[in-house]
Length: 464
Image (cartoon, rainbow, N blue to C red; front, side, top):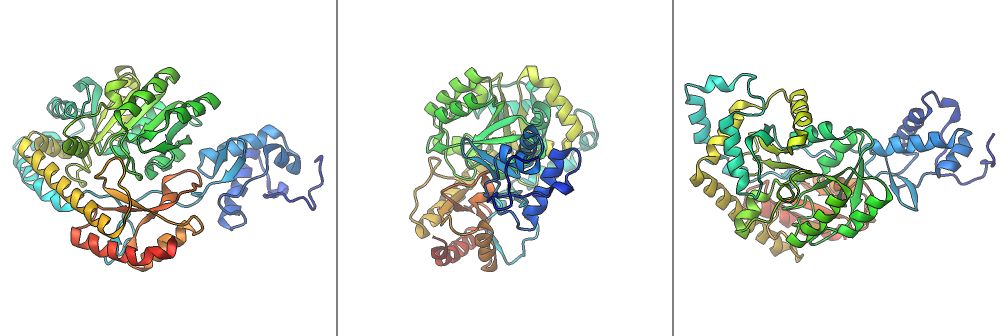
């Protein structure tokens, strides 16, 4: 029997004990889902303590703990050390970003594209590869990691980005998103904990939830993730992995400084963390900086899985990326690639390979995309007097808004004005005190970009 009477006790969640079935922890989470869907529980609601709920339901304390842990893995709950367990702000709201269901008249500032008008640079290579008499050899299941020629080209390109690898430790995959899924499937198991920046790539959060992994947000400054806070979390409870976007964090836009990389390196070594390095923006940052900051793959080659995407760089419609892994992880990575992909399109991989082998085309693409990125940021600055992040030419910029306004209301109201954008709530697993809207600068022609910025400028005062 319960120790306390709960007739008049202000408990924040009252599951129906008569509906509990075995396994009880799963049954509890099913009730939690129902109560969220029916608005009986609002996001960021603090749930009863494990002992309190166990007493209320007259069940074992560890069963409630198991249920809460399961809820965290599913992305329904989050914890604040010393404060308790809360309903996630993203519970039952898909945070996967896509172009589905966007009307043609809407200016899309949500999806981060990569100046699609540059795709014409790739067309001659599509014709060339398609007309090659040996093209039929690209249309089979053989060489699922890529041909030696394709991998050799990949290795040579990666070296320009500071990556030190071989064709034996490199694989061709179907985009970085695909590479993240492969890495999580190969190297992590349910309930493993992965540290991320407090604001991070929304689709990585969603993938982690799909694999039942726990996201551990770490605060940052303009140089990147704060090492002392990462170490604190490692000491509280075992963390297995670390997800970083070192060249340009999505959505904040900071670039990890050299000193910060060195500081994080020491902690990663000490705690034996596995690094997932998502470096999709390096092609641009190495171009305008005229120098290469060492990636973690170079600093910690035995602990880093490195991902370099060609979709932002060359063409979003050709789903190709390069995955670099330590030799000791080869078997697991190869097995996951086969189980998830069987094989990446050999045709797409060959087109990208031929583009990379044309230094003139590579230079034109980077020069053109940088010019457009530079101009897009300039136009943003004419409307909004806001500081640029430590990466001064990101594909996205942020505008602070009031924390009092619902994220769904912000997005819905702007959509009614013909603007699709995303609230910062999509880029975090917990409620944050400094919300903003993220504006993708690289997904529209500059004239459309300016039109959209003008509308946002007129409307933004209603949300600040």
